[in-house]
Length: 239
Image (spheres, rainbow, N blue to C red):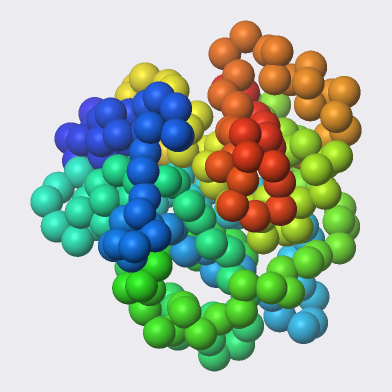
């Protein structure tokens, strides 16, 4: 039986993020309208995770926050998501290691592997433990890719855009939540029960265009705040 709070969280996601991102607004003169989900990546000096592992973890952590049962009931979690869905869907990736990584575990969010995603907030209200962490310096060696899971959805990243690991982490986070919004609750519940498994792959421009033409694909078009031109299709999700 599907948890009623999960159903409510999924309905909120579907209702609030449907349509063109340009329909959602923010006013730089009103900081409360500039909302973001913070992503913190654990990057220890010894044996840091591979880029592919980080992207996979970021995508799973972001959708886990959106579909946490706490988003289905009145309270801090749902309020934070609802406010974020009402404005531009920003994500900010930061890096941490050692004690700073341990410190942020106490803040409301979900950790998947090397990434913790947090309940969104206005950028002026980011907790100090997160705000003090650096945004730059999230570059990672490609390393080995995780094994493919034939039963899991695919998120493909356009490698020709040359996005940093932090930027790419934000984009795959967008893709996982938009994929969930595009599917029915029963499908998403089964996905959640399995732990939101994903295949994340960075592909060349030709392969990316082919995947974007796939029936039922869910593309992510970036607002162009950083690194890429406004309206660029950065990643695509296929169930």
